[in-house]
Length: 547
Image (tube, rainbow, N blue to C red):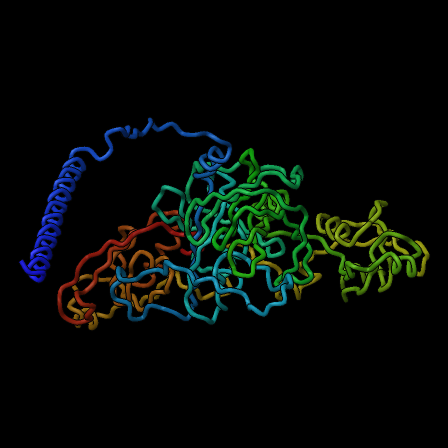
């Protein structure tokens, strides 16, 4: 056999051997894989023990107890601003109306902001800059959300003034209750940014009131509210500081806001909700935050409940808050050197200006006087003077210890009404009483109607008497229950309606909270001629302020 034949035969044997080895490998791999797959299908982990879920046993702690206890007392407040110029002249299908469900997104502060406090402070009702703030009255419709806390079982709720101050409609929702309860404003106080509203719902569970004077820095703080519309949100932190004075461009010259500072997470929508201590007692009403983004950054502010209680008691008694004033201005940062130069004393308040026609001017107080005492009690700061006089009943005489050119004297001054002494701070007028309206021509129920002449009745193919609805005011009681332009009212509370006079007569017998039921005829397609008329019976309860 030649060398060539031997090499050829050797190559053939090598190839055959390699092919045989590969075949054996494939066969073994297939057997192993099939076996593993079979084992996997039978039991993946034969030595593993199945997990079991234990019986549901709540893990109790103080925070969960507080959340459960306060759940029925913290409410969600939704508000709407509806310009009076907007009416429903052509609205035919009330069921298609949808109230805005989402508030504007929070916009970040100016990235070039210098970090000043004025650029950081935000009322957290929502929206850009400071929250879901309402536009000026001439602007368009808007809606927003806030929070509140029930303080009286008969339906009285504490919240922030900035939550309700521009609202034309307020609704309150309780946790676990799908009903929207219409609310009315009992009174507001812009100086402390507090408001009292009321819902027609009895036997509520009122939150327990605490004493904010007992607070210490480092105490637990629990905030509950509806941040970004998420109802009954609970966050926890501590009391970070007390008696915090916060710059606020909206309240220049007003010195009644000394806040509790907390790092409990609070965000837009928390406004008006309670801040609680570890005992579940209300120690504050959440009011604003310091933030560069509009969201929580660990610096929130709540109005102390002791201040809120004073405001609440004034409002439920009189409808508004009355504070005393003598009509002077001073600089909070005047040092002792000024007091010594002009008064020769080391404490007191240096008078920078005296309000024309105010109590101080009438009593003879002048610029550059130093007020060192009130009724014999030393005055150590301007804030102390403000707090003392503000809590003094209007018309009370006070004896002021005054130093003029370092000479002591006593001046009697009669305390005046702050809203009148500093009328420019309150828009030139005192707060209006509940129920007062700047619009004397406000339509009852929010509708206007006209009588139907016999000719019109025939033209409309109408077999019944009645009055036709010509306009429906957006956001009104009539709007809510579904009345539309073109409806014919034939009965009101089961009494025949033949003219506008009948509507007025029946309205005069109603008071807030009374049930109201209309019998209304509505023509198919909204046509005023031809076709058949369909009966509707829209109903509701007379809200406060609308009869």
